Image (tube, rainbow, N blue to C red; front, side):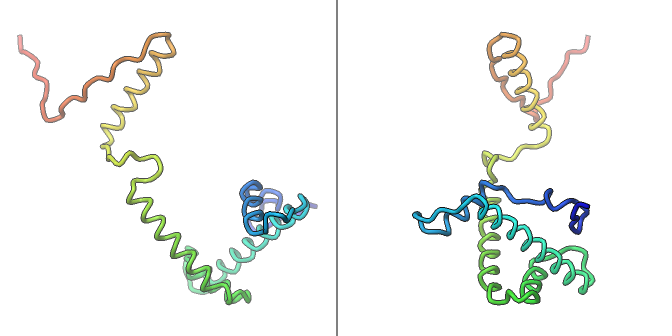
Length: 161
């Protein structure tokens, strides 16, 4: 019989990115220390179990407060309840740093933004232009020159016959 976790998925379904975890493990150790692959796998499994434990306790704290969404305060209370109180200050500092970095990223416009906001109509027009360029390239033609953006304040007037 397969072991199941809280959400009904097998424990094998819940994991952390191996490359990222390996990088974290290596960064924490002196450069001359090597870690066996089995030890890396064990550390990753320990991290998954720790996350499951904190998540479960956070959920219980949240339920006791009659809330439906786990908030950072619930996670901090869960750490305390599980005996990890000595880490709360460091965890809270990391959370505050994360909030600052998130705000800074959003002010910069994010990873994919060029800093200019587009209306939905402008985005659709740009998408259509890009599709047309892609079609032209696929059909063996060159790239169609970019059409000048029509001035939305000037409506085209059609002559009445």
